Image (cartoon, rainbow, N blue to C red):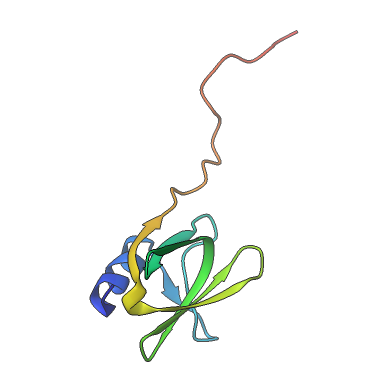
Length: 95
């Protein structure tokens, strides 16, 4: 992944830089990063904050974990759909 690719991913997620220096998507969205190195794959999901520093990407997850990945080892990213807070389609039971 390049800095441009990472920037496009964060723009797609509507992420904003917070006062603590981390870039965070809105609360109802999460990121997923896909990395690979020497045939080993790693998927980091439910990312709540990202920080890029000198060829490294730090990613904080919803579980409180922090992953440190080489930017060059990341080959793709995904943005989760926003949480649907509206009513779901279907029948309701009435009395």
